[in-house]
Amino acid sequence: MDFWNVLEYAAWALSAVFGLLMLADLVRIDTTYDNELLTSSREGEIEATAERHSI
Amino acid sequence: MANVTSTAPEGERLQLLRVLGPAHVWALGVGIVLVGEYMGWNFSVGKGGMIAGLVACWVAGLLYTCVAMIDSEVTSTVAAAGGQYTQAKHIVGPLMAFNVGLYLTFAYTMLEAANAITAGYLISVVATMTGYEGALDQRPFIILSILFLAWLNYRGVLATLTFNLVITAIAFVAIIVLFLSTSGILGGGIMQHAALFEGHELPYGWIGVLAAMHFGLWYYLGIEGTCQAAEEVRSPARSLPYGTMAGIMTLLIAATILPLRFRISSASAMIRILGVADGERQRSSWASSRTSRPGRSIATME
Image (cartoon, rainbow over all chains, first blue to last red; front, side):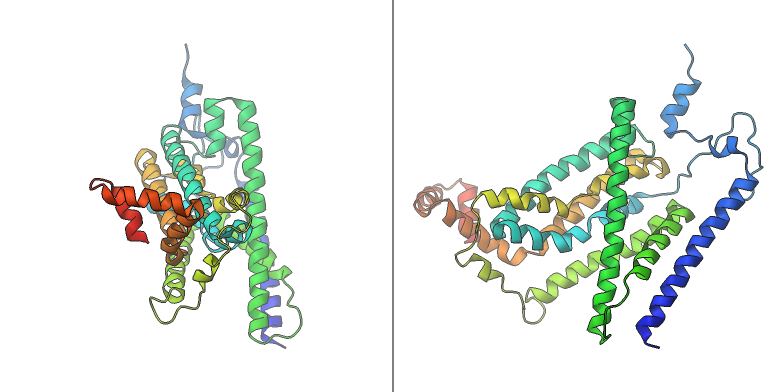
């Protein structure tokens, strides 16, 4: 088999590995942590300050 | 994340880690742009000739220096992730933020796809150059590029931008090596830049300058991306202006050195185009004036 054909298969295999790694991590994070925690971030300190501010 | 408890204590929120320094900001800005330094000249000179490419480089350089200054100034006070999206949100309002966010998403999605396709194409060119017969399937390399970049981003901003710092430094050194090896400073020059001035300095007239302008933006397009990392930078008020301005200076140098050889001759060609008689009159009046610096510099350039 030609060197470049080997590279093609290697690229397919690596792509699958990266994709599966991300999928596995997605499932792990989703089952380990609360949705409340995962969606708790705010855009910057300004928004957090605005939320804490009361007139 | 692994050691964090599964439920948030009262009032605790997830937040971004402040891990980046000015060098990462520099690499982010320059890394987005640098491919334009290779490609921009080809297209802008093709559209309007050498002088049009040069004018586009100068005008776009002025514009983007202003963009870099405004962005770094505004973002260091609105230090939140999202760059122009956050600026629009805090300065104009949610609808403008939606528009800007949408444009940014489109821009970077298309940019990544275009870069991945270019990477696949370049690999197939290398395969052909090394004697591979037939057409190499580019798809695995395109998909690998996208998945690798996605995984790198998934790993976190520090891993991504440290990797980016290394490849940006390599690409910038490559530009300098390209300049030195083709300009005749090291070894014989292979470029025939002088031929660009033999009767076709402005092949399409001054309208060619307009045509060249949108490729002229390639030399700097993307430097504004530095402010997207505002929330992850350790000291935004210092690092963002520092990294961004260092970035625009790097790009100005890179955009300047590639055509440096014909820069000097283009100045004289421009004077010729603007009118030989007028130029002669100005030059003689400048030369007669002891205090006139422009006259002296143009005479030196010629």
